[in-house]
Image 1 (cartoon, helix red, strand yellow):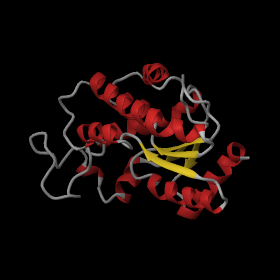
Image 2 (cartoon, one colour):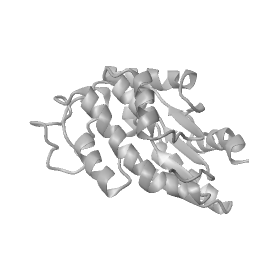
Image 3 (spheres, rainbow, N blue to C red):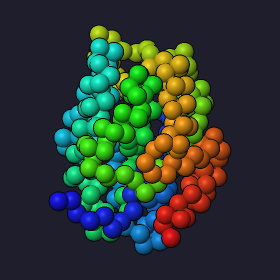
Image 4 (tube, rainbow, N blue to C red):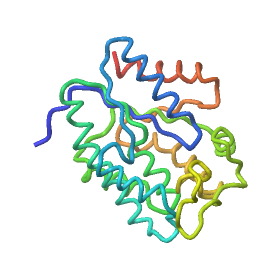
Length: 227
């Protein structure tokens, strides 16, 4: 039997280059300043088992991996994270901040051809009903997002050799970033639709504004959850 959930579960998600890591750090610092104990995690990964799965998913070319396999691997890493990190933290009243969650699988594997609605059905079983109280979706167009991470649209899909990462650390994107600009446009489109059928609230915040303004919008969106 799962532990009862007492804390708050908040997810930050969005396209590549939307500033999730920056806003995650700012939000964690702000919560701590208010005396709210926060546990941070990332998806995929966040556990020893999950990090091994993360390496398979993001460090190598996935062009030969069936999208069903890809989706199941993301969900397997997430199931371990939910069991080992998220549920125990929530059970003792801590707030959990997660960098990506089911919304990312809906968007990225959805853009690769897996029905986002099926992702949600799969998550119901894999995660045994563990949904965030709210997901903040940081929205940015792919071209601007690529620019923020130092990659132009012309670089999409490049810098992979024989299915292996290149030698020099930082010289290539991960397997999701490396896909075509058209793929990333589909990702964004799915993110923007999720609020209409995701099981819990998805609030879109314009990530193209100044970092301070984005932080203020996120805090405003969380006012009802943290009250």
